[in-house]
Length: 154
Image (cartoon, rainbow, N blue to C red; front, side):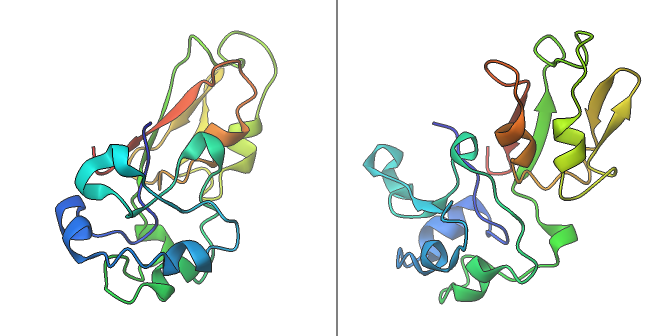
């Protein structure tokens, strides 16, 4: 399954080599959304990830996950510099684009209009400002979801 790294994650190869697999970040997450990857992920086994359809990153103001990391695999960064990935909208699945009233993703985006705003009759993602937190993915009521996050590590 596709995953994103927690806020402040270093480059993928560096994270895999530096992460101590101590799970301190997962224990520090107040929303219990950070999990260690399982053996199916090869060399990334045991490193922290979020499976966004299961639960989004809530972009906690003080980034307790990064604060708890003893190895530096996760670094404290300003919320505006969090770059876990970027959301992509499939207009063929989006209720608004199909003419049904829905504003869940735009209304609940923790970054706001810079990351997710209206473009005519459907939402549009501001790729340069989207953090990849997955709130929009998690809240989208469309069957199969109209949004997905392309991870920064992909």
